[in-house]
Length: 255
Image (cartoon, rainbow, N blue to C red; front, top):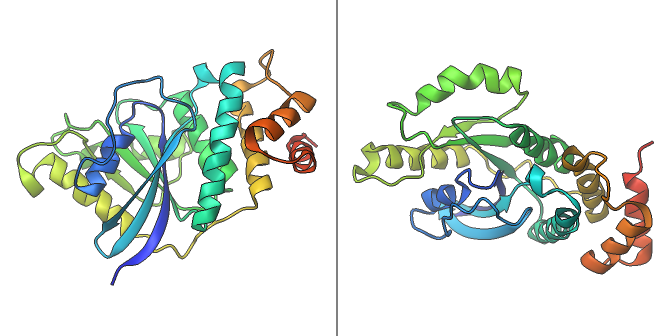
């Protein structure tokens, strides 16, 4: 009997290997793998397939990139995040966050994306698991976690309800190769979660939290729209009526 579906947000910086992780889980190429580091911020695409007895919907989401978060990147990020929020609500909420990080570095943007998705958008109420990528040079990929667990948790303050150390590069050694072991590690990680902790927030609250979260990336940069300009953009780009846009703006104001 198939259980689910389980709704999963897969997120991380552009180029970290999220599409390779989707293909790893699916056991076939379903996501286009690209080295393009200029991916559209907050863009997301849904993939559906079965993992053992579990049916999963994975939302492959491009996280926020600090260099893009000027005026030109601000409104598109809000618009695409709004579409993601609406689709997640239509699907019933979020069950699990999968946070992809590169095994060779944890950047400021990595930490900001963690805060945006886990702390701000999901209020620390959704389990978050780590997928550590680009570990093909490790003799035993799990050794990376043994060496770095303490710094990930203590130095960077990243919580996790599980992890998988992986490579997205296929090999010819089947289940015994690093790629086969990577697939098993991710499948085992997903099967630990049964969807009993599903989380859903009212759309307006989610969008207000997102707008406040963007301050992690924009700070007080000159030219970032506020007040009436932002309210107008919510109406035009997100299709909100004026009253709803105004309520959201009120929720974004600092006390």
